[in-house]
Image: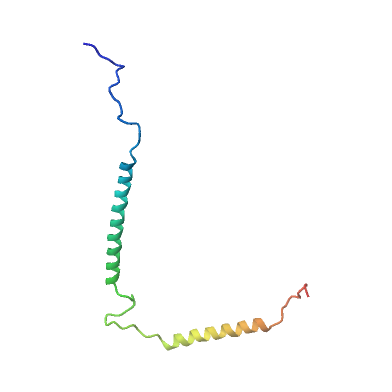
Length: 100
């Protein structure tokens, strides 16, 4: 019985890469990803569409009213800011400007 260690039985058919096969794999993976993203987007849309538009809405569907005192407090705060801004703009500068 003779054993040949140096005999090469394996030979490639071609030494070129088959790009059609790899582009097919890339195309298939991309197609599956697009389909998965479309289903996921539809699922998110349907679940979001079922939720109420306002989180603070009551069970009767009415939104609570705003307190009149809180509105007046905010208006007073802004009027104080206007007065402070006008005082700052109309007062002379405490430091002498060297460029003049």
